[in-house]
Image (cartoon, rainbow, N blue to C red; front, side, top):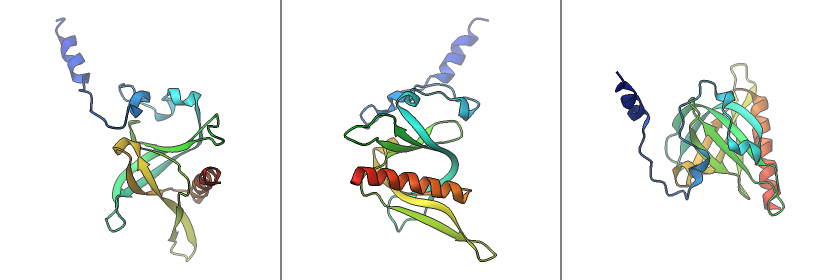
Length: 173
């Protein structure tokens, strides 16, 4: 039966999704999800370097009065251009879900505010467990998104806060 291959090919065909983002998806070729997230090689590695790669949970809302929308566990990468443009290296954060699909892709911008979130432990100690930033998500027509990034380790929270603040400062000066 040579007919079975035609059926398989059809199962993988997906119609192109219209986008208004102006071709930002060029670095996302259609491909089956890779079994291991770490092994995914992408062309942006040549122009950008990942300053932080960490697992996170992230939540978002469009206005402060809304309830948080839970996006579950994602892989966060803080990427910075290797070469400076106009005196600074552009940076962005990208969140990928378990199959490697980008669900949030947002550039760092001047005067961006970074709010650290703390959680009180039963023993009374306070632990930093996340940051809140306003991101403009290229995956969703650059809609402004209030984003809560929740991290397991306080050390990761401090690293992420530092990366956000250093890059914001470099752009704002």
